[in-house]
Image (cartoon, rainbow, N blue to C red; front, side):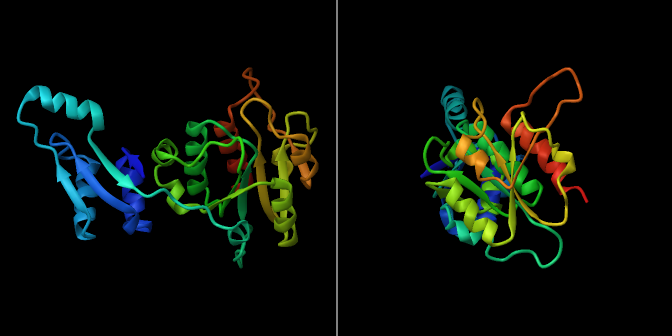
Length: 241
């Protein structure tokens, strides 16, 4: 069971998976915040809501330190089979997917899920080993992205790529050594963007399984970005018409 402390993440779960929310606890001093919306929505769905009413100021401080303005106990989201991510290709326009090769920082993973929800990414492939789990931190940082973007956890990315490629999805990997730019990727097809590990980037077999490799070249004095910021930049380029 996950303990979520971002009210916007909880609201997203209440919208998409209301039965997954088991209980909501709101601090007595959170009136006028987004937790009011959480409490109201939860009550409408028959979910238990507890309002903290500490009798002494010292108890009130302890409660606030422990749970903040509120907390919800939520069942974790479940991954889907990889084929479900591209089961229904868009009839118009071109779809975007993400694949993450050993992204290990929960903050980065949560930020990527949030970006995926913002840019209408249709699904995320994640590796089973050496990847951050979709835990409470990821869900809170994602601000609802985990609820709106399906994900699949696979033991072998290259095998998953082959299945995606059979469904007319082209796989583009990010590699700083590539001479091709992400800005030159054609927009006339579906793309799965592959982002590598925070420190080492993509593994060799992952690189070799891509249809093409592109770089996100710096145009200023800062030479690199972390994986979440790089994902944001690449998605901005690839989603532009």
